[in-house]
Length: 373
Image (cartoon, rainbow, N blue to C red):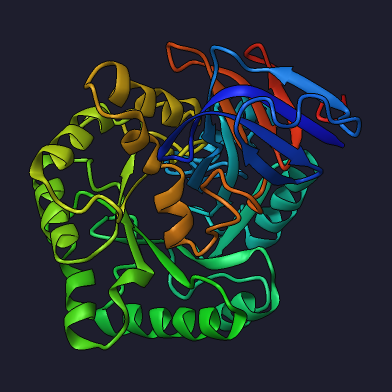
């Protein structure tokens, strides 16, 4: 299938103006001046995108694809995520993970759910592990998971500073990270340690201990939920100034909402390339309810329309920055020739109108469509 997106305002996420985007099967084949391909006899479909703006599809690196919950008994368990919700949120790539409950939900469930999401047209990866030590895995070894299972790109979410965690020591966390680092090197992957930060008294202290006591690279760690309280966010900002990655959680109302946190980061003048935002969707919310993946898109849009953040800056937190940290770039997180054709088309109010996942259209006029159509 060869599709032409005609006359679209392109953010890659950097702004490059009005262009034609030529999609061939799963890839972006060309990005050219408007009109170059209009009379090509090999086109299967031409979509007039006048008035629309193209961004890379969103990457959500923290999704409970088999559901989170369990903290309040069996009835609090949450079911699998609906792929339609993912598409309608503008997300084209996600990373699934386990949380507090790794007994009634296990790595095999996670793996099967990721495979199902891939069959629906999404790109889905996994973190091995969960809150608990020792870490659950598919092959009985975190190292082997990273080397042998294509979908596994790291471990998470590793809980620290939280009464629900296994209270790992610095040595235990360092040993786990060492296995992830080795697995990432051998498997040719990012080897990310995705760290859940709770509201405990030490905040990022345990992670800082590991970095001080070992030679592990700082860039392999991604502490998340850093905007859950002001004191933790201040600690995270300093960590980021010193070269660390930080991940904000969308939909936060108890702590610092993402648009407010992003405004603070932009105003600080710090390097923003190590800042990302994820949804924590389909997990339980401490104040009650279930996290929604739509909140990721809503918060990024809120950065633009409520805070006046430049669109290329706002979308970089859920596209290019994530792709580079997870070592999925340049196939993911960008609009450029040779990249996967994961493209979100927005109207002038930055509302999602159309979505392409690996070259197949999954959303049209704001509604879910069959990707085979």
